[in-house]
Length: 122
Length: 250
Ligand code: SF4
Ligand code: FES
Image (cartoon, rainbow over all chains, first blue to last red; front, side, top):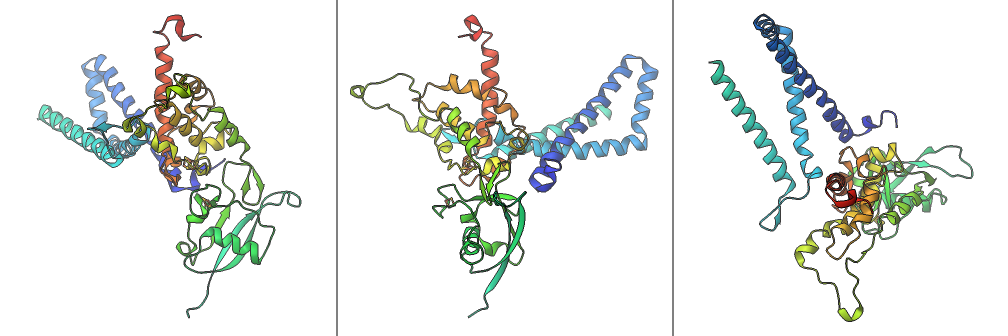
């Protein structure tokens, strides 16, 4: 079974999807570290904020953004596979409707969050 | 008349009497645009080597016996056309994740055992005598499981599933879809019995939601959906037993 996933583009997408979960975990750790630094006082907190502004950190965050966006995209694609059928007015909701609803909700939630953070920062 | 087109078909051969291991052989097959890959194999058998062995019957995507790996993808060879590959070479191999018996024929006994194990028949909720008449089912109740009755046991979904490759004991997509078909049937009362197997070590939790089984299924059964719905069902059973008297013990 060695290298099985390289044999088919479908498996490659699956593996990339699974691998990008690590980026989600990495970002959670970044945020957790921030929380710990905040608990340690003002100096530690500003130090963490400064570290976040470094070019390396910005590149890292851009990479995270791309990976997590890909993860979200492919995660919603799995919705029709993993969920019981949704029936509205006696009719089954089409798989592509389920997927696009998920994508739309994710985009709206992200934009709303961005708006709120923008407001607070301004 | 236009010139006769010829395609190369590479076949993974294995004759248990003479071969130590499977080997490839290439045949140059003249074809017409209406010829399926199955007909290509039949041409090889009729004109080049009568020992070439493969299964087929209906030639119309309904019996489920002609499945093979065609350029690495599990497909029914009777509904796959040579013209779609020309001028490139077609490679045909026995279905992945099964032991090869001879050439393109795989050993399905493990699959048959799995089918038997999930008790693929109605275990009546309430036994009725002939005098009491038939079991009544509404169209809505029928709609709950109809999709999962379409399986033709072609086992393409097993060839597509990397988890079947890793654990051959995994009950797998089609058998779980069939178990789900009976569990969802309003006349059936056997869910508890089937769930025991579905929740076992060889059951639904082998699935890591790759989803390729549903992609290759020629009958749109969506076996991956049946597997994943039963992860939820098995988890529900697990937690609900804490609420039931005797902790769910029999
Ligand atoms: S679920 Fe689909 S792919 Fe699997 S055996 Fe049945 S018909 Fe074939
Ligand atoms: S020969 Fe029956 S499904 Fe292909």
